[in-house]
View 1 (spheres, helix red, strand yellow):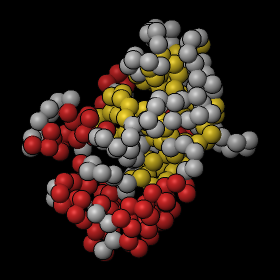
View 2 (cartoon, one colour):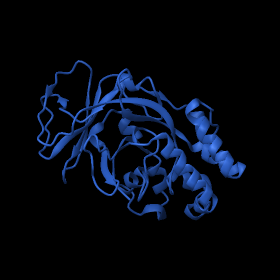
View 3 (tube, one colour):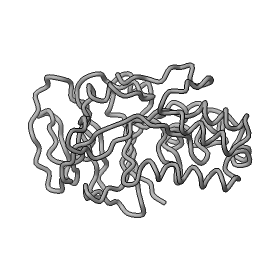
Length: 276
């Protein structure tokens, strides 16, 4: 598996390199107690970017997928990404990923639902020619910090409610602006990532996943507990070089419950997109 985040980090953040700059920014703009809560909630993500010559390669965007012969691929799908689990294992992340094998992410070019296939090491595979394939681009990686946006469940729990979260964190324009500048300075082109927090323009992956079984939303006492079981397996941003343009600055997100991930049951991945 990847170098999973220690459980202690949920309450006592360890100042690993991926966390240091974010923690300093938060301390500079928020009261000490609020800053401590936000720093404790930060998670490592494996940020994926286009690989240059000499970069370590952990996978690819697009191209021709290599899949077991018994995997059916419906019309209207293309390979979004293929990731080498052994290569990802060298990076710290908050997910219990397989240590070997390949994760293949298929995306709907139009209205078809995407899905994920885990290919164990040594499995027989065959190239699939898909009519709407995205161009192949190798990916490299590094671990960086992510933080809960908007009113993601972990943030709501830490501050005691939705209104309390906005009052403590998001009412400060200087902090929001500094956070936006911090993110733009690190990632000028794409925001593809494995693990960590996904974008939450409309609803977070935790909220979308929880709503599948707890339709009452925040009014239901079980909603928060169910939301906290969901994590981001992969997030893909729009990428002009890869010809991945979904409109309105959208992201593709593949979410999964932690227990399904631990069981390597990728048939239960949640696939959806959201934009501004």
